[in-house]
Length: 415
Image 1 (spheres, rainbow, N blue to C red):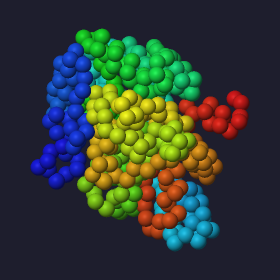
Image 2 (image 1 turned 90 degrees about the vertical axis):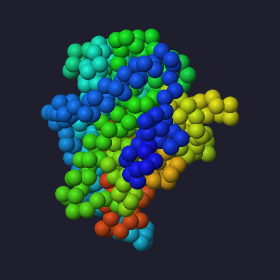
Image 3 (image 1 turned 45 degrees about the vertical axis):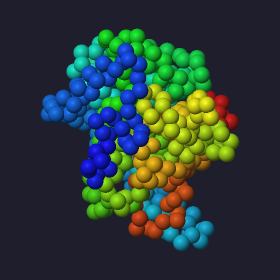
Image 4 (image 1 turned 135 degrees about the vertical axis):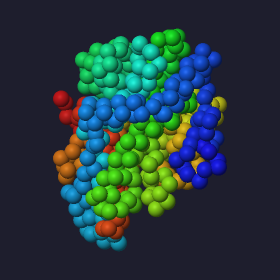
């Protein structure tokens, strides 16, 4: 972060820090590659041809801009709840940023397009990635197929069981899916294995990190590629309502969809931002993935951030019904925004997310992924108490096809 700039959007600093968070904590073998990546990224930022190719692919391959949809039925439903409960508000007007309508069904493709273009610039001939919910794996496999590069996806074996449809999609797209059996067999462990692969194969391999975490410059470049979400939402709400929203809401695991929505609005002091972590079975149970609310500073996966860890600094197991939020850390920019109080970080339990999932299906005909269902749980809490002239934008960062087996299991339905 540039301490001489009044803008909250100016970070990170030249060493990759947002306040005390961020930085580069990597093996000596990787440091030359990280520095080379930053050099190529800076050159790409200054190259109009890179931006033009990125924008063209977002438009014609991904299908952007994604719609900003006025959720009229949900707005009306929550307003009625407010009236029935005698609450002072009449229910805020709710808009959904429909990134689940992107090619591959989530926001992840935005970042993967940007990173595969960087891989091409660097002359890399092999792609690796980690995935939890499978959406980043699908997006990585998609862009690797599009550009004709071999691709290996690391995925925890527990997540492979939870996300069978996405595993099949990755294989259809030509990717090799490697099951990770270590640790909790989820996202953290998949990222560990991907980093081990990268260290071993630095000469030809590009690691497409899926979230706004990892060593600098990954948190910055992922944020910048995902900021298309917030830039579009800003223009769309101004067109629809003639003003900026009162509240932005997004789910947070590592935090890429949230920082993509929030970043273009960080300097707008009147726009409140709410990030929603996964509270799992409840914060008091210890079985959750809320690293900001229940964690402490530490180093994981190449950056300093807020982590779920014990008194000895050992990473503790995270839990969420959502494979994409089941991570014991968070992107360093979110850790900084939490520390300075710019973003309000809340949480939603598995049960909260399921109730929001069912409601959105019922009243809007939209089957959300379990990740944005956490954001919708926060919307359900907030909107009824707000005045009818208030505006909420919630990021619908993924669709729920991938979660049908998890949801069916919770509902006691055998598919």
